[in-house]
Structure formats: structure tokens, C-alpha cells
Image (cartoon, rainbow, N blue to C red; front, side, top):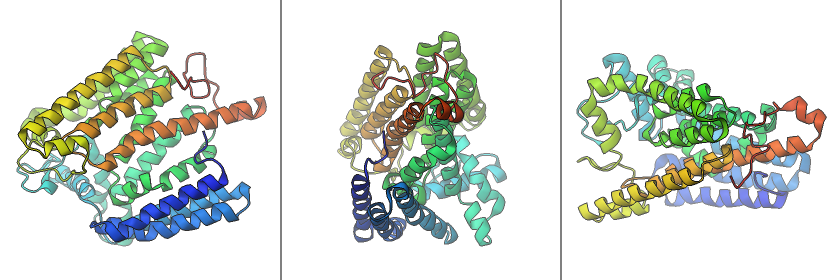
Length: 414
């Protein structure tokens, strides 16, 4: 699967991205989004022109580079140096400061929506650079910004995932990864908040590890993900079923047990000492069950129903439960047989959760979208490497054993 097809198709894609970005300075009320759109729109337009004007062998890379520079790197650096960031970034950075000074990453008596920390304790890790470096000087402003570390985790995990799926060296993965990162789907999230990006990358990596039979590393990565945010928990049964289907019960149990122990080691100390605070901020607040409403208010079906009153809120929760049961039934009836199929199952479950939850943002849908796209991109590259012949194939990719479920051999219908 190519990232965007032939040259004219890619040019059309960059042109559409330019039009979409140009809407933000005109229609958005969020200053950071307005700033991003003003920089990203011309960058995407330049990318479209480069894709059509340059020789084919360099056009795609040059277009992706221009988009990456103007839609990601430049706005991220400028926003970091000016100290402008969305509330979720401030929450993560504040949580690290609280952990350093009080031992608990949660405010005991939140009053405003920005006082709530809806993330599990491991998310605090991304705020540690700010707590250590502070806000003095441009280098500290940039390197202390949690968004930089969100992006680093996201990119590192996707590169590792692609290599596990058989796509060859990291250099082969850079062009599609650059184009994906420069796309409006990721660029806007990365420059504004980016808090869900490490979750996307870690889930992709965990499922790729499971598809390759690496139960213990998969369990550790899953444990890390499950200690970041509650939305990572559906990845645990998906990975366990993938391992069970390909390698048997013991690897599946080993991965699941490792994940549970690793996440419990992070969460339990706070659950035992601050159970009420954790329940209020991590569970009730994201579900819209607290007196302070969550700012996640995109008009998704669950949010629209919840806005109708207590009955609508109950209906949205009931539909959420029914949708989750339906996806779980599909997972049990047709367990995944490879990384692509596993990511598809997880993406379906997360889409149902985000669409039917009483509170949500359109930005959350980036997670299931990348879960669907990236394994397919790596799978397509793996097949091209395999088709290049024995010399190139065995020189650039690790040969999967008979049960890896790697993307080079995986059925797209599994």
C-alpha cells in the first residue's frame, strides 16, 4: 500500500490538506489552531507544487519534507518557544511538578476543568523534562515541552513497529512516516497537544511485538500503555488473543500477566493511597460524571445524547456498553491472525468508544486512524522488499519464522 498513490494523487492530497488547514485561521476560535493553520496551509500548497514539478525520484520526499517543515517543525518550535500550549500539555507538565513536590500527580480538590488530570500516572513521565529544566532559556523551553517527548515516543514506536513488521531498515520507513506525521491528522495534534500520540505508537508497537511472538516485551509495552491512559486497556485482550491464536496459551498468558503486573506496579500505589482522587479524575471526569464538565465536547453521537439530559447520558452509556460487547464478540469469534488484523480490531473498539462516550473530541479518532493506516503502510513496504529479490530481501529485513504473523505474509482478511 503506497501512502498516497501516484504523483497527481499525492498532489491532490496535499492540496486538500492546504485547503483544510486554511479553514482554521478563518473559523477556529483556538489561537494555537489559528497559528498552525496560517503556517501549515502554505506549506501544504508548496508540497503539492513540489510533487508535480520535481523529478519523480525526489518529488515525494521533497513534498513530504516541505509539509513536515511547515506543518510540524516550524509551528512546534515557535509555539514551544513562546510557551503556548493546550490545556492537556499543561496538565501533564503540572502533574510532574506535583509529583516532584508532593508525591502525587493529582490536585486534591480540583475546581476548574484544567485542574483535573484525566491520565493515569505514567503519563506524568512526559512532563518530567519541564519539571527538571524549567522555563528559562530557549533550549529549556523547547526540550522541556512535553509535546516534543510525545512526538519522540510516537515516532520511535512507529519506526520500531515498522521494522518488526518486516519493512526493512529505518531509512525505508522514513518517507511514509514523514508523510503520515506531516498530514493534518497528526500535525495539528502534535503541535497543539499531542497527548494521545505516544498511546498510538505504543499500541502499534505492542501488537507488532505480539505478532512476532515476543510475549514478554509485548507485555512490558502493554503495561506501559495501560499505565498511560485508560483507552489503552482494550489493546490488552487484542494482543493476548493474537498471541494465543499464533503461539498458544502460555505466551498469551505471559504477555497478559506481565502487562497487568507492570501497570499495577505504577497505578496501585496511587489507587491505594488516593483512590477517591484517582476515581474522580481518571474515570468520572472523562465520562462526564463530575460537577465540572469536561472540555471534550465535539458533537459525536455520545456527546449529543449526553447533552439531552440525564436520560440521554444514560442512553449514551448503554450504547457504549452494547457497542463494546459487539466488538468483543467480533474479537472472540474471529481472533486476529496478524498485526494488521489486530490493529483493525483495536481500532474498531476505540472508534466505538470515542463515538459513543458521553464526552469526546474528533481528535481522539486519530488513534484508530493511525492504527489502521500505519501497519498497512509497513506491510506494503515489506511486500515490496520481499518482491525485490533474495539479495535485497535478506540484506534488509529480519526473516520471520513460520509463526510470526509478520506483515510480509499476513492475510489482509485475517
